[in-house]
Length: 72
Figure (cartoon, rainbow, N blue to C red):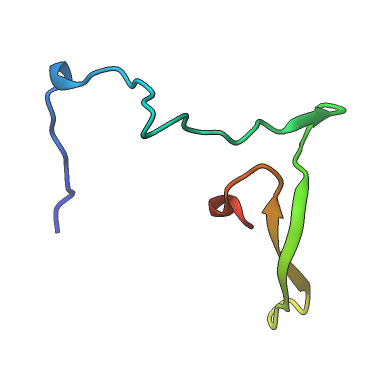
């Protein structure tokens, strides 16, 4: 199968403008820098499980001030 390509006319693009319907995008804050290292604060642990392969306890974490799309 061949690669898929998308073509568009650049002159038809317009700058993004916030509207009441769409509001601000990318509301997540940048990480804090502590001693030169990026740090994020967790809001809570949503779940935990033990990995059968590695025999390690794993957690699902919700990051403070981030959407659920960023859960790890």
